Length: 388
Ligand code: PMP
Image (cartoon, rainbow, N blue to C red; front, side, top):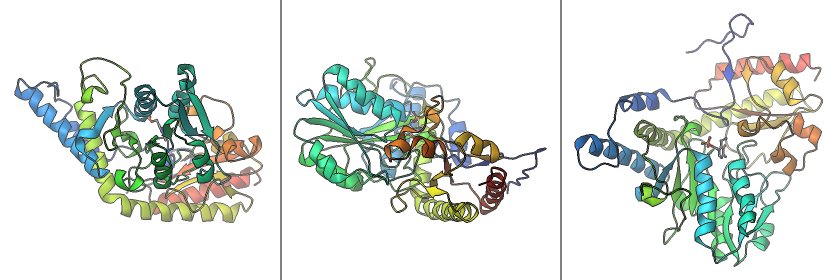
């Protein structure tokens, strides 16, 4: 067991920012190491070096497909969720030119929102649907916007700042009634909630390895739909990944991603129960020491262990400094260069001040009860120092 001493001399930080990234699972690291020296090109079929590499990639493809209840032939490896989201949105919009509207939601990750807005330059009408105060999409409003002109709709499963879960299955029904394609960014879902493509019912799904205890630099777009959704690739080249994502895939990263998905799917129930319990314990402790603190976003429709808390009277930066030794963040890692209040929290209807006083806190697979006890103590002292 890791021992934490939070003295200034030898702080061992307590990592509670699992929505930014997750630590590499040692079991995943062990598998990845075995393939670091695998030099064959996995797309080569003329010798055993290539064939063996190709087999390893296909094992990973099957593991990923099995983890989400899908078909291995429909897994398209990408460099991560950003690329998968871009491929889904541009790919669907450009392949399906008969329809002229794209729809997404105000709380989406930048790698969905930016490509969706960029479709305006390609002549599409783009609607960004607001969310309710609890961060959820209003289904009636969505239904009034998605029509027979709608080409692609993109709604994330678990929000990366708030942990709010969107009703993807219901949204899929609305989209399919109108004949629109539904993409769902599930980067935050694997290992935190079950991801079954048949239950969620979307057509395109984004995954990212570093959000489920795998390495950075690898992800996938799952291209479902009956018949399979047609996409226009973003790049042209050697025709790999069914022509949708040309380029040689990185064997060690693919293998590690496969193992990370296998473990995450197998252990999701146990992990989710633990993370949910630890998150609830931490929230209880925060509200006990700071009764004015408020949980942002839906209480009920929330990923286990993911908290976003407003501490009125302090800024996110002051809070982060006061909680030295506990690693949390004041917003999305991808937007941390932006010195503005979180647009996700503003979309919930929070004021600038409330959004700037909010922290994202998220436990993970390896968070221990002991770490939560220590975090509670640091938070208690930090809030006291700030006079909260
Ligand atoms: N979508 C969501 C919901 C995310 O949380 C992230 C990572 N912050 C991304 C997309 C981008 O992921 P990647 O780093 O794999 O490109």
